[in-house]
Image 1 (cartoon, helix red, strand yellow):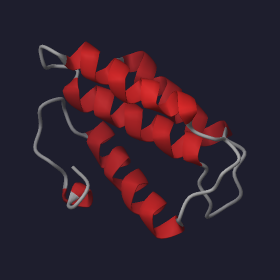
Image 2: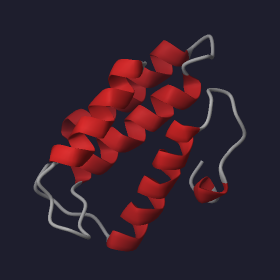
Image 3: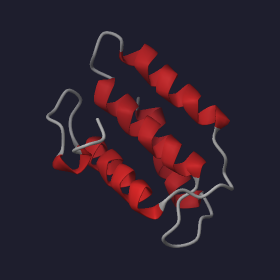
Image 4: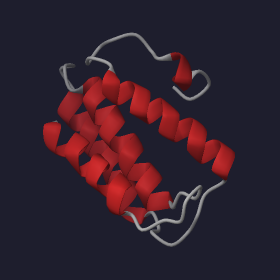
Length: 97
């Protein structure tokens, strides 16, 4: 679990994106790390983590995503990473989960 979170952090700091832009892969990896963290305490947490992480394999490092959508998803992911597993849904995630 810590590995997925660390990987998401490393990718977020070394993605090479321009300021105020997000690429599909970075956003997917950040989201996957947050989802893995949020479900790690559940019985099927490992299966859920693998499923959400696998979805990132098909994403592009060069394709950028809509800024408003990306910022909302990134804010939710960061908020999830601050919560303990099984905690309440952060307000940043309204409309996403």
